[in-house]
Length: 180
Image (cartoon, rainbow, N blue to C red):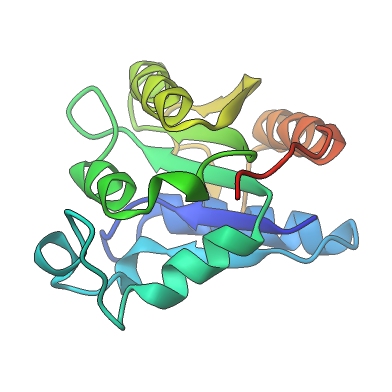
C-alpha cells in the first residue's frame, strides 16, 4: 500500500501544511511510510502547461507519486465556502486513470465553525466523478488557528482523536483494483 498526504493549498505558512505534516508524523509513529505532496511546490505554470492532455517535465513527479499511492489523504482548507481553486486545477491536470482504484480520506479545516464541511462535499463529488472511492468518515477541524498548539506542533486533543479515527479508517480500507 502506498499512501500520499496532500497539503492542498499554495498559501505559505498555512495551517493546512501544519496539519498535513502532523498527519505524516502520526503515520510514521504507526510505522506507515507516506509521501508528502505540498501544493506550495506545484510548478508555477502547470495551469497552462499540463491541461488538455499536455505534460510538462516539472509536473510529472507529482503524477508519479500519485500513481504509486493507493490511498490519498487530502488536507483541504476552506476558501470561499469550498476548496481552493488550485485543487480543482490540480485535479483537472491529472490523467483520469490516476484516480481509479484508489481511496481518498478527507480532512477539512477552516477558521469558521464547520471545518470546511461544504468544501469537502464539493470535493467528494468531484473525486467520485473521477473514479475515486471516498471514505464516508471525514475530519472537520474548525477554528483551526485557535485550536492549533503551535508550541507542540499539534492540534487540540479532540482533533487528535478525530484525525486518528480517520487514519484508522483509511489504513483499514481494503485495497481496490487499480485501473490499467
